[in-house]
Length: 426
Image (cartoon, rainbow, N blue to C red; front, side):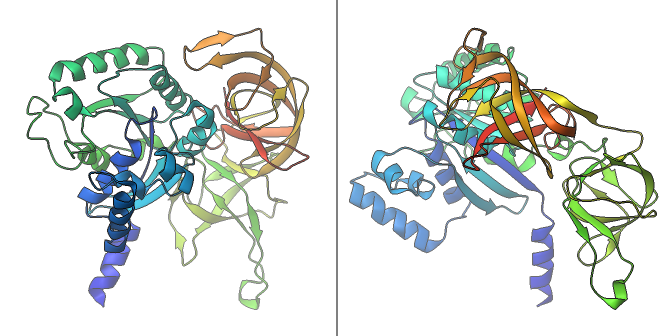
Protein backbone atom coordinates (compact mmCIF):
# COMPACT_ATOMS: atom_id res chain seq x y z
CA UNK A 1 0.00 0.00 0.00
CA UNK A 2 2.83 2.37 0.91
CA UNK A 3 4.55 1.63 -2.40
CA UNK A 4 1.35 2.52 -4.27
CA UNK A 5 1.05 5.84 -2.41
CA UNK A 6 4.70 6.64 -3.10
CA UNK A 7 4.17 5.88 -6.79
CA UNK A 8 1.03 8.07 -6.94
CA UNK A 9 2.82 10.94 -5.19
CA UNK A 10 5.80 10.62 -7.52
CA UNK A 11 3.54 10.51 -10.60
CA UNK A 12 1.60 13.60 -9.54
CA UNK A 13 4.83 15.51 -8.93
CA UNK A 14 6.39 14.57 -12.27
CA UNK A 15 7.10 17.45 -14.62
CA UNK A 16 4.53 17.89 -17.40
CA UNK A 17 5.55 18.73 -20.96
CA UNK A 18 3.00 19.73 -23.58
CA UNK A 19 3.97 19.34 -27.21
CA UNK A 20 2.21 19.75 -30.52
CA UNK A 21 2.86 18.26 -33.94
CA UNK A 22 2.74 20.20 -37.20
CA UNK A 23 3.50 19.24 -40.76
CA UNK A 24 2.11 18.89 -44.26
CA UNK A 25 -0.47 16.28 -45.16
CA UNK A 26 1.04 12.76 -45.19
CA UNK A 27 4.25 13.86 -43.46
CA UNK A 28 3.56 11.21 -40.81
CA UNK A 29 2.50 13.19 -37.73
CA UNK A 30 -0.03 10.65 -36.48
CA UNK A 31 2.32 7.76 -37.31
CA UNK A 32 5.09 9.43 -35.32
CA UNK A 33 2.87 9.79 -32.25
CA UNK A 34 1.73 6.19 -32.64
CA UNK A 35 5.38 5.10 -32.81
CA UNK A 36 6.23 7.14 -29.69
CA UNK A 37 3.39 5.51 -27.76
CA UNK A 38 4.11 2.03 -29.10
CA UNK A 39 7.87 1.98 -28.55
CA UNK A 40 7.58 3.61 -25.11
CA UNK A 41 5.09 0.86 -24.09
CA UNK A 42 2.23 3.34 -23.60
CA UNK A 43 -0.45 1.43 -25.55
CA UNK A 44 -2.92 -0.93 -23.86
CA UNK A 45 -3.46 -4.40 -25.29
CA UNK A 46 -7.08 -3.71 -26.29
CA UNK A 47 -5.97 -0.52 -28.10
CA UNK A 48 -3.34 -2.49 -30.00
CA UNK A 49 -5.85 -5.18 -30.93
CA UNK A 50 -8.30 -2.55 -32.23
CA UNK A 51 -5.56 -0.92 -34.33
CA UNK A 52 -4.47 -4.27 -35.76
CA UNK A 53 -8.07 -5.09 -36.67
CA UNK A 54 -8.65 -1.66 -38.26
CA UNK A 55 -5.38 -1.94 -40.22
CA UNK A 56 -6.41 -5.36 -41.51
CA UNK A 57 -9.83 -4.05 -42.60
CA UNK A 58 -8.17 -1.18 -44.51
CA UNK A 59 -5.86 -3.64 -46.26
CA UNK A 60 -2.67 -2.11 -44.85
CA UNK A 61 0.49 -4.20 -45.19
CA UNK A 62 1.55 -3.30 -41.64
CA UNK A 63 -0.04 -2.15 -38.37
CA UNK A 64 -1.05 1.46 -39.00
CA UNK A 65 0.00 3.29 -35.83
CA UNK A 66 -1.55 6.54 -37.12
CA UNK A 67 -4.97 5.10 -36.21
CA UNK A 68 -4.10 5.70 -32.54
CA UNK A 69 -4.73 9.43 -32.93
CA UNK A 70 -6.97 9.61 -36.00
CA UNK A 71 -10.13 8.76 -34.11
CA UNK A 72 -12.74 10.39 -36.34
CA UNK A 73 -14.31 8.16 -38.98
CA UNK A 74 -13.60 10.75 -41.70
CA UNK A 75 -9.95 10.82 -40.62
CA UNK A 76 -9.58 7.06 -40.87
CA UNK A 77 -11.33 6.90 -44.23
CA UNK A 78 -9.24 9.68 -45.77
CA UNK A 79 -6.01 8.90 -43.93
CA UNK A 80 -5.69 12.48 -42.69
CA UNK A 81 -6.03 14.40 -39.41
CA UNK A 82 -8.96 16.86 -39.30
CA UNK A 83 -9.44 17.81 -35.67
CA UNK A 84 -6.91 18.27 -32.87
CA UNK A 85 -6.34 14.91 -31.16
CA UNK A 86 -5.00 14.93 -27.61
CA UNK A 87 -3.11 11.99 -26.16
CA UNK A 88 -1.52 11.47 -22.77
CA UNK A 89 1.39 9.26 -21.81
CA UNK A 90 4.23 9.13 -19.33
CA UNK A 91 7.75 7.76 -19.04
CA UNK A 92 9.74 7.41 -15.80
CA UNK A 93 11.07 10.95 -16.38
CA UNK A 94 8.06 13.01 -17.50
CA UNK A 95 4.34 13.20 -18.20
CA UNK A 96 3.30 14.32 -21.68
CA UNK A 97 0.23 15.84 -23.32
CA UNK A 98 0.35 15.59 -27.12
CA UNK A 99 -1.75 17.72 -29.45
CA UNK A 100 -1.79 16.11 -32.92
CA UNK A 101 -2.88 18.96 -35.21
CA UNK A 102 -4.01 18.90 -38.86
CA UNK A 103 -1.73 19.73 -41.78
CA UNK A 104 -4.26 21.18 -44.24
CA UNK A 105 -4.27 24.96 -44.64
CA UNK A 106 -8.04 25.07 -43.99
CA UNK A 107 -7.40 23.72 -40.48
CA UNK A 108 -4.90 26.43 -39.45
CA UNK A 109 -7.23 27.46 -36.61
CA UNK A 110 -7.03 23.91 -35.21
CA UNK A 111 -3.24 24.13 -35.14
CA UNK A 112 -3.38 27.48 -33.33
CA UNK A 113 -5.74 25.98 -30.75
CA UNK A 114 -3.59 22.91 -30.18
CA UNK A 115 -0.30 24.84 -30.03
CA UNK A 116 -1.38 27.71 -27.78
CA UNK A 117 -0.24 26.02 -24.56
CA UNK A 118 2.65 23.94 -25.92
CA UNK A 119 6.21 23.96 -24.58
CA UNK A 120 7.53 22.21 -27.69
CA UNK A 121 6.47 22.08 -31.35
CA UNK A 122 7.42 19.08 -33.46
CA UNK A 123 7.53 20.21 -37.09
CA UNK A 124 7.66 17.29 -39.50
CA UNK A 125 9.31 17.54 -42.89
CA UNK A 126 9.10 14.81 -45.54
CA UNK A 127 12.73 13.98 -46.43
CA UNK A 128 11.72 13.48 -50.08
CA UNK A 129 10.04 16.89 -50.42
CA UNK A 130 12.10 19.12 -48.14
CA UNK A 131 10.94 22.53 -46.86
CA UNK A 132 7.52 23.42 -48.37
CA UNK A 133 5.13 26.36 -48.03
CA UNK A 134 3.34 24.47 -45.26
CA UNK A 135 6.65 24.19 -43.39
CA UNK A 136 7.02 27.98 -43.54
CA UNK A 137 3.43 28.35 -42.30
CA UNK A 138 3.96 26.00 -39.37
CA UNK A 139 7.25 27.66 -38.44
CA UNK A 140 5.56 31.06 -38.48
CA UNK A 141 2.68 29.90 -36.27
CA UNK A 142 5.14 28.36 -33.79
CA UNK A 143 6.97 31.70 -33.76
CA UNK A 144 3.73 33.72 -33.45
CA UNK A 145 2.57 31.62 -30.49
CA UNK A 146 6.02 31.98 -28.87
CA UNK A 147 6.51 28.23 -28.48
CA UNK A 148 9.91 28.18 -26.75
CA UNK A 149 11.31 25.00 -28.33
CA UNK A 150 11.00 23.61 -31.87
CA UNK A 151 12.17 20.14 -32.89
CA UNK A 152 12.31 19.67 -36.67
CA UNK A 153 11.76 15.96 -37.36
CA UNK A 154 12.97 15.09 -40.85
CA UNK A 155 10.80 12.03 -41.44
CA UNK A 156 10.73 9.18 -43.98
CA UNK A 157 14.52 8.93 -44.05
CA UNK A 158 13.99 5.28 -45.02
CA UNK A 159 12.61 6.48 -48.38
CA UNK A 160 15.79 8.44 -49.20
CA UNK A 161 18.14 5.58 -48.23
CA UNK A 162 19.00 7.28 -44.91
CA UNK A 163 21.34 9.71 -46.71
CA UNK A 164 23.10 12.26 -44.52
CA UNK A 165 23.29 14.90 -47.26
CA UNK A 166 19.47 14.95 -47.57
CA UNK A 167 19.18 15.64 -43.84
CA UNK A 168 21.89 18.31 -43.95
CA UNK A 169 20.30 20.14 -46.91
CA UNK A 170 16.87 20.32 -45.23
CA UNK A 171 18.47 21.42 -41.96
CA UNK A 172 20.29 24.31 -43.68
CA UNK A 173 17.12 25.44 -45.52
CA UNK A 174 15.10 25.53 -42.30
CA UNK A 175 17.87 27.47 -40.55
CA UNK A 176 17.68 30.08 -43.36
CA UNK A 177 13.91 30.31 -42.79
CA UNK A 178 14.31 30.60 -39.01
CA UNK A 179 16.23 33.87 -39.39
CA UNK A 180 12.85 35.52 -40.18
CA UNK A 181 11.17 33.86 -37.20
CA UNK A 182 11.29 34.38 -33.44
CA UNK A 183 12.18 30.91 -32.16
CA UNK A 184 14.56 30.57 -29.22
CA UNK A 185 15.63 26.95 -29.53
CA UNK A 186 15.64 24.74 -32.66
CA UNK A 187 16.78 21.08 -32.81
CA UNK A 188 16.93 18.69 -35.79
CA UNK A 189 16.42 14.90 -35.73
CA UNK A 190 16.45 12.51 -38.74
CA UNK A 191 13.76 9.87 -38.18
CA UNK A 192 11.64 7.17 -39.73
CA UNK A 193 8.32 7.08 -37.87
CA UNK A 194 7.29 3.98 -39.83
CA UNK A 195 10.43 1.99 -38.99
CA UNK A 196 11.11 3.59 -35.59
CA UNK A 197 14.57 5.02 -36.35
CA UNK A 198 15.63 7.69 -33.83
CA UNK A 199 12.13 8.01 -32.37
CA UNK A 200 12.52 6.06 -29.11
CA UNK A 201 15.45 3.84 -30.09
CA UNK A 202 18.62 5.02 -31.78
CA UNK A 203 18.94 4.12 -35.46
CA UNK A 204 21.64 1.60 -36.31
CA UNK A 205 21.51 2.59 -39.99
CA UNK A 206 21.97 6.37 -39.48
CA UNK A 207 25.22 5.97 -37.56
CA UNK A 208 26.33 9.34 -38.98
CA UNK A 209 23.82 11.09 -36.69
CA UNK A 210 25.36 11.63 -33.29
CA UNK A 211 22.54 13.61 -31.64
CA UNK A 212 19.84 12.35 -29.24
CA UNK A 213 16.68 10.46 -30.16
CA UNK A 214 13.37 12.30 -30.22
CA UNK A 215 12.13 10.78 -26.95
CA UNK A 216 15.40 11.65 -25.21
CA UNK A 217 14.96 15.28 -26.30
CA UNK A 218 11.34 15.35 -25.09
CA UNK A 219 12.33 13.85 -21.75
CA UNK A 220 15.26 16.17 -21.13
CA UNK A 221 14.54 19.50 -22.83
CA UNK A 222 14.59 22.20 -20.15
CA UNK A 223 11.17 23.84 -19.76
CA UNK A 224 11.30 25.43 -16.29
CA UNK A 225 12.52 28.70 -17.79
CA UNK A 226 9.52 28.78 -20.16
CA UNK A 227 7.45 30.37 -17.40
CA UNK A 228 7.77 34.01 -16.36
CA UNK A 229 8.73 33.95 -12.68
CA UNK A 230 9.47 37.69 -12.50
CA UNK A 231 6.14 39.49 -12.99
CA UNK A 232 3.62 38.62 -10.30
CA UNK A 233 0.19 38.29 -11.99
CA UNK A 234 -2.84 36.75 -10.28
CA UNK A 235 -6.19 37.14 -12.13
CA UNK A 236 -8.97 36.62 -9.57
CA UNK A 237 -11.50 33.97 -10.63
CA UNK A 238 -13.59 33.59 -7.49
CA UNK A 239 -13.98 35.09 -4.01
CA UNK A 240 -13.97 32.38 -1.32
CA UNK A 241 -16.28 33.03 1.65
CA UNK A 242 -16.98 29.72 3.46
CA UNK A 243 -20.35 29.57 5.17
CA UNK A 244 -18.95 27.82 8.25
CA UNK A 245 -18.42 28.95 11.84
CA UNK A 246 -14.79 27.76 11.82
CA UNK A 247 -13.96 30.09 8.89
CA UNK A 248 -16.38 32.87 9.78
CA UNK A 249 -13.96 35.71 8.87
CA UNK A 250 -12.16 33.95 6.01
CA UNK A 251 -12.02 35.89 2.74
CA UNK A 252 -9.78 34.45 0.02
CA UNK A 253 -9.25 35.08 -3.67
CA UNK A 254 -9.01 31.99 -5.86
CA UNK A 255 -7.29 31.82 -9.22
CA UNK A 256 -4.38 30.52 -11.23
CA UNK A 257 -1.04 32.32 -11.05
CA UNK A 258 -0.36 33.63 -14.56
CA UNK A 259 3.27 34.50 -13.83
CA UNK A 260 5.69 35.20 -11.00
CA UNK A 261 5.62 33.92 -7.41
CA UNK A 262 3.56 34.83 -4.37
CA UNK A 263 4.37 34.32 -0.69
CA UNK A 264 3.20 35.70 2.66
CA UNK A 265 4.60 39.18 3.23
CA UNK A 266 4.63 40.21 -0.44
CA UNK A 267 3.53 43.79 -1.13
CA UNK A 268 0.78 43.68 -3.74
CA UNK A 269 -1.56 46.04 -5.57
CA UNK A 270 -5.12 45.28 -6.67
CA UNK A 271 -6.24 46.40 -10.12
CA UNK A 272 -8.27 48.33 -11.18
CA UNK A 273 -8.74 50.02 -7.78
CA UNK A 274 -5.01 50.50 -7.18
CA UNK A 275 -5.35 49.74 -3.45
CA UNK A 276 -2.28 48.10 -1.90
CA UNK A 277 -1.96 45.40 0.74
CA UNK A 278 0.24 42.52 1.91
CA UNK A 279 -0.26 38.81 1.21
CA UNK A 280 -1.36 37.19 4.46
CA UNK A 281 -1.40 33.55 3.33
CA UNK A 282 -1.17 31.35 0.25
CA UNK A 283 -3.60 28.44 0.60
CA UNK A 284 -4.06 25.24 -1.38
CA UNK A 285 -6.81 22.67 -1.00
CA UNK A 286 -5.08 20.93 1.92
CA UNK A 287 -2.69 23.44 3.51
CA UNK A 288 -1.06 26.86 3.52
CA UNK A 289 2.27 27.02 1.68
CA UNK A 290 5.34 29.23 1.99
CA UNK A 291 5.37 30.08 -1.71
CA UNK A 292 3.37 29.45 -4.88
CA UNK A 293 4.41 30.02 -8.47
CA UNK A 294 3.06 29.90 -12.03
CA UNK A 295 1.05 27.97 -13.13
CA UNK A 296 -0.30 26.82 -9.75
CA UNK A 297 -3.92 27.37 -8.69
CA UNK A 298 -4.16 28.78 -5.15
CA UNK A 299 -6.16 31.04 -2.84
CA UNK A 300 -4.56 34.28 -1.64
CA UNK A 301 -5.66 36.11 1.51
CA UNK A 302 -4.64 39.72 2.21
CA UNK A 303 -4.04 41.69 5.40
CA UNK A 304 -6.54 44.37 4.37
CA UNK A 305 -10.23 44.01 3.62
CA UNK A 306 -10.38 45.28 0.01
CA UNK A 307 -13.34 45.05 -2.34
CA UNK A 308 -12.08 42.50 -4.91
CA UNK A 309 -14.17 40.53 -7.39
CA UNK A 310 -13.80 38.25 -10.41
CA UNK A 311 -11.93 40.01 -13.23
CA UNK A 312 -9.69 42.01 -10.89
CA UNK A 313 -5.95 41.26 -10.80
CA UNK A 314 -3.54 41.05 -7.87
CA UNK A 315 -0.02 42.08 -8.92
CA UNK A 316 3.34 42.74 -7.32
CA UNK A 317 3.69 46.44 -6.44
CA UNK A 318 7.09 46.77 -8.12
CA UNK A 319 6.10 44.95 -11.34
CA UNK A 320 2.96 46.49 -12.77
CA UNK A 321 1.33 45.40 -16.04
CA UNK A 322 0.21 47.76 -18.79
CA UNK A 323 -3.28 49.14 -18.25
CA UNK A 324 -5.30 50.44 -21.18
CA UNK A 325 -8.26 50.26 -23.54
CA UNK A 326 -6.42 50.69 -26.86
CA UNK A 327 -4.71 47.37 -27.58
CA UNK A 328 -2.66 46.22 -30.57
CA UNK A 329 -2.36 42.53 -31.33
CA UNK A 330 -1.74 39.81 -33.87
CA UNK A 331 -4.86 37.71 -34.35
CA UNK A 332 -5.75 34.40 -35.98
CA UNK A 333 -9.34 34.52 -37.22
CA UNK A 334 -11.32 31.44 -36.19
CA UNK A 335 -14.82 32.44 -37.30
CA UNK A 336 -16.74 31.43 -40.39
CA UNK A 337 -17.92 35.05 -40.80
CA UNK A 338 -15.00 37.33 -41.80
CA UNK A 339 -13.72 40.01 -39.43
CA UNK A 340 -14.29 43.60 -40.55
CA UNK A 341 -12.94 46.92 -39.31
CA UNK A 342 -15.47 48.63 -36.99
CA UNK A 343 -16.90 45.23 -36.09
CA UNK A 344 -18.01 44.81 -32.45
CA UNK A 345 -17.13 41.76 -30.37
CA UNK A 346 -17.04 40.48 -26.80
CA UNK A 347 -13.58 40.16 -25.25
CA UNK A 348 -12.26 37.52 -22.86
CA UNK A 349 -8.91 38.38 -21.21
CA UNK A 350 -7.74 36.22 -18.26
CA UNK A 351 -10.80 36.26 -15.95
CA UNK A 352 -12.06 39.62 -17.22
CA UNK A 353 -14.94 40.19 -19.66
CA UNK A 354 -15.44 43.28 -21.81
CA UNK A 355 -16.62 44.39 -25.24
CA UNK A 356 -14.59 45.96 -28.02
CA UNK A 357 -14.62 47.50 -31.47
CA UNK A 358 -11.98 46.77 -34.12
CA UNK A 359 -10.57 50.23 -34.84
CA UNK A 360 -7.90 49.44 -37.40
CA UNK A 361 -6.17 46.66 -39.30
CA UNK A 362 -2.66 47.71 -40.43
CA UNK A 363 -1.96 44.48 -42.35
CA UNK A 364 -2.53 40.75 -42.67
CA UNK A 365 0.12 38.10 -43.17
CA UNK A 366 0.51 35.77 -46.13
CA UNK A 367 1.64 32.89 -43.96
CA UNK A 368 3.05 30.97 -46.92
CA UNK A 369 5.47 33.76 -47.87
CA UNK A 370 5.48 35.83 -44.61
CA UNK A 371 4.73 38.98 -46.66
CA UNK A 372 2.46 41.74 -45.30
CA UNK A 373 -0.71 42.63 -47.22
CA UNK A 374 -1.70 46.23 -46.37
CA UNK A 375 -4.48 46.54 -48.97
CA UNK A 376 -7.01 43.92 -47.84
CA UNK A 377 -8.82 45.20 -44.72
CA UNK A 378 -10.65 42.04 -43.67
CA UNK A 379 -9.76 38.68 -42.15
CA UNK A 380 -11.34 35.43 -43.33
CA UNK A 381 -11.29 32.05 -41.59
CA UNK A 382 -7.71 30.86 -40.76
CA UNK A 383 -6.11 34.19 -41.77
CA UNK A 384 -3.69 36.05 -39.49
CA UNK A 385 -3.29 39.82 -39.25
CA UNK A 386 -2.50 42.75 -36.99
CA UNK A 387 -5.42 44.71 -35.53
CA UNK A 388 -6.05 47.50 -33.04
CA UNK A 389 -9.07 47.30 -30.74
CA UNK A 390 -10.65 49.62 -28.19
CA UNK A 391 -12.28 47.96 -25.19
CA UNK A 392 -15.17 49.21 -23.07
CA UNK A 393 -13.04 49.09 -19.91
CA UNK A 394 -9.30 49.03 -19.15
CA UNK A 395 -7.52 45.65 -19.31
CA UNK A 396 -4.38 44.73 -17.34
CA UNK A 397 -2.01 43.10 -19.79
CA UNK A 398 1.58 42.34 -20.84
CA UNK A 399 2.98 41.65 -24.27
CA UNK A 400 2.45 38.05 -25.38
CA UNK A 401 6.23 37.70 -25.74
CA UNK A 402 6.58 38.44 -22.02
CA UNK A 403 3.55 36.56 -20.72
CA UNK A 404 1.49 34.06 -22.72
CA UNK A 405 -1.42 34.28 -20.24
CA UNK A 406 -1.87 38.02 -19.69
CA UNK A 407 -0.77 38.65 -23.29
CA UNK A 408 -3.53 36.59 -24.91
CA UNK A 409 -7.09 37.65 -25.78
CA UNK A 410 -10.02 35.92 -27.43
CA UNK A 411 -12.79 37.65 -29.37
CA UNK A 412 -16.32 36.28 -29.21
CA UNK A 413 -19.23 36.83 -31.60
CA UNK A 414 -21.96 38.39 -29.46
CA UNK A 415 -24.81 36.93 -31.49
CA UNK A 416 -23.66 33.30 -31.49
CA UNK A 417 -21.33 33.27 -28.44
CA UNK A 418 -18.72 31.49 -30.58
CA UNK A 419 -15.01 32.22 -30.26
CA UNK A 420 -13.98 33.94 -33.50
CA UNK A 421 -10.48 35.28 -32.83
CA UNK A 422 -7.33 34.31 -30.89
CA UNK A 423 -5.15 37.33 -30.24
CA UNK A 424 -1.53 37.84 -29.09
CA UNK A 425 -0.87 41.33 -27.69
CA UNK A 426 2.16 43.09 -29.20
